[in-house]
Amino acid sequence: MKRAILNIRILRKHGACTEAVEWFETQPKKDYKSLLISCIKEDHLEWVNWMLLRLLTKENKIRYAIYAATQVLHIFEKKYPGDDRPRKAITAARNYVKNPVNKDAATAATADSAAYAAADSATDVSEQKKITTKILTYGYKLLMKERKS
Picture 1 (cartoon, rainbow, N blue to C red):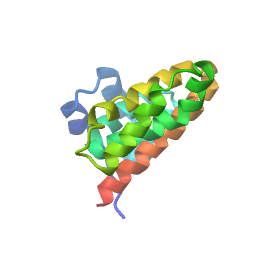
Picture 2 (spheres, rainbow, N blue to C red):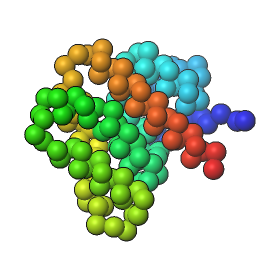
Picture 3 (tube, rainbow, N blue to C red):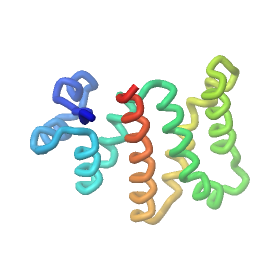
């Protein structure tokens, strides 16, 4: 199976920052998996998320947001036990994925906001990196499934 390769044209098309483009040019391997691993090792997690959000289909962006929000929901609910907005956003997003024409479309868009709010509640930096890496890996898997089909 041929590996999916990222190239400078794709980065420029999506408006990648100069620092990311320069970093990319120094990488010996340009396949998505190698770049993901390098970004994680070099603490460029935001670059992976940025690229996933530009390459994934709309449906998979929502799946990615749902997954991210569910990974950090417990952190948010522990800090804000009476605030059920993230949980409602996750439910709405799941409903939207099942039936994209339903009334949950607007609420589904807030699932990623829920994930960020919950992630910001995590105070332990190593916990944040571990959770973020898990989320990015899931996004990578979604992208690879898209590339195969």
